[in-house]
Image (cartoon, rainbow, N blue to C red; front, side, top):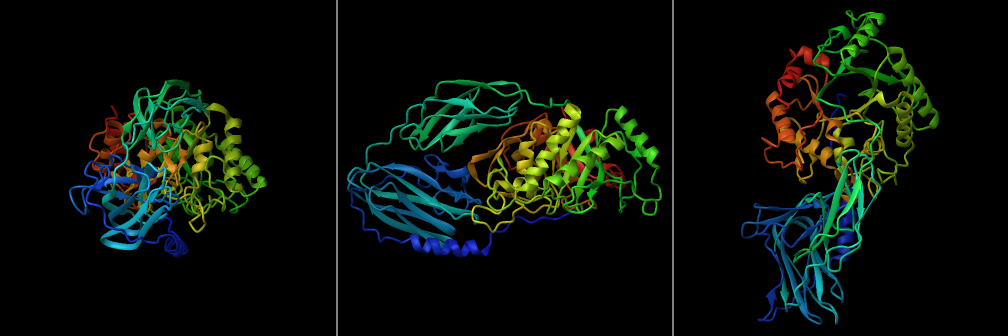
Length: 604
C-alpha cells in the first residue's frame, strides 16, 4: 500500500495542439462603436448575483469574490480532461443588427464568443492573461435571428480561468420566455442504487433540473440523467423542470420508479477495517492473529501475491521464522482465525499491495486467479477477498473510454473473476477494495489515456471494476494517503493530511460524479454502508497521516454535517460504514491511537 502518486499530467503535445488550433480559429474582429441607444443586454454579466442567468458545463463554474475586475463578484471556471468549462447565456437580440461582445478575463487559453448569430459565429481568445485582460469581438445577426448564445471557456485539462464584466452591446430583442414544463418523462435501467431518466426537449430550454421526492437532486444540460445513491428495493417519485436565462418552468408530470433489490443486503452497524502484516515483517513488528485486538471488525491478511505479474497464480504464506521470530504455527494461525470469526469478525485475504502487480491479461490468467484465490480462501477458512491492486495492475487501453462497458482485457477478466468468486461462495462472500485516489477520484478529471491519448492510462482505472461489482461490493475503502492533490466536486484541489481531503474524497463516492467531466457518463454514488475512509495508522505507516482531531471532524461532517469547514458536502450520511487503516500492526506500534479514537467516536 505504501506508494506516492502524482496527478496525471497532460502531455506537452496538447499545449502545442491547443495553441495551433486556437490560433487557427480565434480571429479577433475589430468592434465598431455602439450606437448611443444601444444597451448592455447581458443578465448578471458582472456575476454580482452568483451564476444567475449562466449555465456552466459539468458544474465547472463557480462565483468568487476574489479576484474580481470590478464589483464584488466574478466567474471562476475549471476545465477537466474532456470538458473546457464553458459558461454560457442565451440573449435576445434583433435580426440584421450589429453587436459588440466584451469581457475581462484572467488565465491561459481563455475564449470569448457568440454562437447562433445567423451569420458567422465569432470568438476571440488569449493565450496568456496573468492579470485582467479585455477581450472584444463583434458580429451581425442574420435576417431571422432573435437570440444568440454568449459563452466563455478555457481549454481541456488546463488551469482554472476567471471572467468578469461580460457585456453584449446592441439593440435589444424580444424577451426570452421561460420554457414550458418538459414532457415525456420516463424511467428505465433501474439497479439497486440508481434509476435512469429521460424526457423530451423543451423549446427554449438551456438546461434541466431533476427533482426526487420533491427535492432538487441534479442539474443537467441534456435530456437524460441518472439518479444515484438510492436505497435498494425502494420507490421514488421524479419530476423535471426546464431552465433558461429567464428562469425555471413548472415541474413535469411525476413518474414513479423503484430500484431493484440488489444481491447483498446492507449490513448494520459501523466497522473498523485493518490490514494485518501476516506474510512479512517491517518496522511495525509481527502481530499474531490471536493478539489482534477486538476493536477490528474486518481483518485483511496482507498479503497474497502472484508468482508473476501476468500468471494470475496467487500465493499466500505465513511470515517465515527467519523474518518473524514470533510467528505462530500454521495450526494456531488457522485456529485464531476461527476464533475471530466466532466473535463476529470477518477475515479476508488481501491481494496485490505495493509489490504484488496483478495483470489478468488473458482468460487463462483469469481462471488461474479464480482457482488459486479459492484455494487460499478454502485452506484458511476465510470470509472473502480484498482487492488491493496498485502500481500497474490496472490500466486502460487506448480507446477504452466508457467505464460502464470496459474493453481492456485486464479489466474485463478481473471483473469476470470476481463475479465467478461471488457466485461460487454466495451471498455471504465478503468483497472489499482498497484502491488509491489516482485510480478512483482522479477519474473526475481524467479517464485512461483520454480522448486524444497522452494521459496516464491508469487514471480512474478502478472505476469500471467498482461499477460492475457495485451490487456485490461489501466495502470500498479508498486509500486517502500516499496521494497527490485531487480535485473535488467543488472543482478545487484538495491535499491529504486534513479533514478537508477526506471529506471531499468521500463526498465524491457518496454523491457520484461525471467521469472525465462528461455528464453523460455519471459514476453513480455508492451506498453509505459500502464506504469506509482509508487512513494510515501512524506517521510511519504512510504519507498523509491525519491527527485524531481531524479524523473526528471528518466523521462529524459526513455523518452529521457539522464542522465541515469550507467544503460543502452534497448530503449527510449517518450510515457511513467506518474507517480502514494500514495497518493493525502500525496501530499497535503507535499505542492503539487510531483504533482508540474510532472506539470513542459517538456515531449517533
